[in-house]
Every structure is written in structure tokens, then in C-alpha cells.
Length: 345
Figure 1 (cartoon, rainbow, N blue to C red):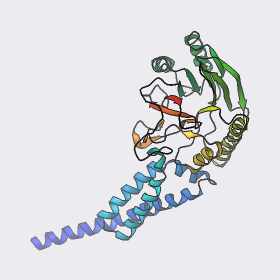
Figure 2 (spheres, rainbow, N blue to C red; figure 1 turned 90 degrees about the horizontal axis):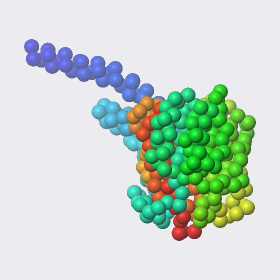
Figure 3 (cartoon, one colour; figure 1 turned 30 degrees about the horizontal axis):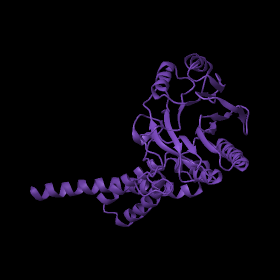
Figure 4 (tube, rainbow, N blue to C red; figure 1 turned 180 degrees about the vertical axis):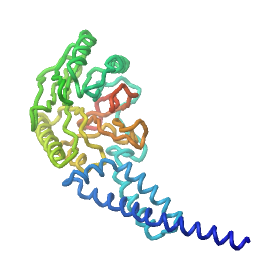
């Protein structure tokens, strides 16, 4: 009787293994193919999408590795380990900032000292009706400059009323029938302020010189298309290329100028196209060395978040503090960034 029971158990295990084996093999092939596809991220929108989802890809690789180890598929497990290590190297900017050692921010400024300028960036979602919550976050943060993306006319009016005294210098172009309205409010005077368009009139961007008491900072705010589909992928890339040329031209006029770029770039730091943009503009990423802090969520949990909203800055500035705020009704989270002058330049 005991032998019969043992044989039945063994047959059950064999049947389970036979059922799981093709599933694990398929999963292994899928994550391996996804990893290799990221090599083509500069040229193919699906590859770029996977590269932007690199954190999620790594989690998939680790889950697959666990199944392979349980099933003792050693050869495939070694391949998955190699792919996971390779993909993880793409996340180095989350833990290393320029010139820094692992886990150490060498900002020239004391993070508790008074910043040169505090900026607030929020993609509020055009159809978000929680305007009071958005305004409350702005007032609590106490920024010098406020950049709002997906700005509609109702929120534009509310902000103009609420900030009329504290932030009287405004450049804005709202949209009610699109998702690319944009606005800038400043505590300090603005000069050379303008709304400009790169490769389409429906995507406004803003630039202005913020006249601080001690110096001027050239501020740029932008929001390209999400790269879903080949057309939008090429459009987003062209937008960034033209913006990069504009920033290069700005630096050619004054190589010592301080510059901050704020925006939902629809691009994560894990895409090679993000690194290409930094290289082309010689800007630095304010999020570098600060870990994984998503600013956009499909669902409100870490594995479903991406870093899409960015503060990039010239080398004569340092980001001494970066804060991601709680939800306010949008699928994005607001960013608060404190910048100070760098003593390294």
C-alpha cells in the first residue's frame, strides 16, 4: 500500500514538472528575448519601451531565475543570471551620480542649507479635478518656480488667482482638448520668456531667464509625446534632438550659463536615448545617485512605476534635494527640487 502511494506521489510530481517545464522554458525565452531586444532601443519603439521598463524586466528575470533553480535547469539559469547582471548595470545612474562613489552624494552644498532656487514640477493630468490638492502641494512646498504640465484652463485660472501675489510672473499656454498644456509661475522676475514649439504646434514648451537676486538661471520646460508606436517614437526623438540643439545653442552664447530643464520627457534614465540626450546637452540628472524613485504609476505600487519626470541641470549647479510628493489625483507625482551653486566649476 505504501509503495503504491509513493508511486502515485512520484507520478504526480512528474506530471507537475511536465506541465511546468514548457511554461518555464517559454518564460525564459521571453525574458531573454526581451533583454536582447533592448540593444535596439535607439531604433525601434518596442525595444525602447522594454528598455524604459528595465526595472520590471530585471524583476521578471529574477522571478524566472527562481523557477529555473527550483526545476534545476542550471544551464538556462546561468544565462538568466548573466542577463540580469547585464540589465542591472543599466541602472547604475540610480546609485551613482557624476564623480560620486556608490551610495554617496558628493553635492557641493549642504542638503540642509538654503537652496539657490527651489522648483516644483507636476504633470497634473488634464482631466484631474483635484485642483485644491494640487494647489495645496504647491503652497506646502514653497517653491520659487512652479512648472505645470497638462495644464487646462480651469487650473490655469485657479493658479493665477492663488499665486497672483506670491508668484506674479507667468508664462502659460493651457489646453482643454489636448494633454500638452504648459505653464510657468515664478516668484522672481522673468526675462526673455516665451512659449516655443519644436516639431509641432500642438506641443508647446517654455523658456525664460529667472532673475534671482544673485544670478540668472535659464529655465526650460517641455513635454514630448509618449513614444507608443513608430510615429510617436520618432516624434519624441525628434523633439528631444531639436531641444538638445536649442540648449547647445544657448551654451554657445554663454558657456557659463546656469540652466535647468524640467519636464515629463516620456523617457526613463534606463534608455540609451536618455544618455544620448545628456551627452548632447552636457546636462546632469538631478535624480542620479538617489535610488529608484518613480514619478509615474500605472498602479500605485513600486513595480508599476517609472521615472518619467525629470530635472536636468548644467554642471555649475547641484541638486541638493529631490523629493517625490504623494499622489494628488494624477498618474504622475509632483517633484520638488532644490538647486544650489556648485563649487566644482
